[in-house]
Image (tube, rainbow, N blue to C red; front, top):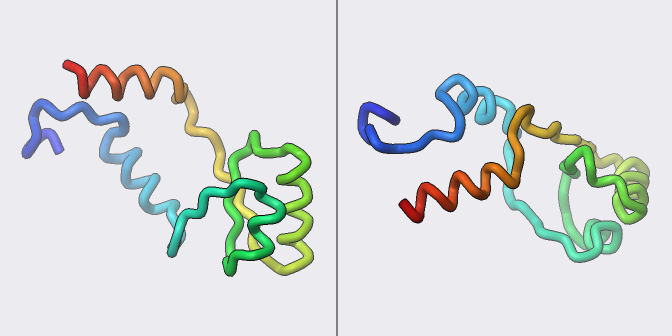
Length: 97
């Protein structure tokens, strides 16, 4: 990236970006939910991906539904040492400077 865009700010280095891409399974569509338990019952999917902090009652019921319907459940870990709040500030600074 630096070779072609010397002033670019990279959040991840090349090795980290490669690891992220290598860890991605194939996805057809990302779906934003309103009520996770109700919504997943009306969506055709194979893999249910969630974050480690998504553990409220709706997610518990959704996970149980996925198990009963033989859906793969993947919990994506938090990115170590990355604060969402700090990231938002950094990105805003990139576009305002």
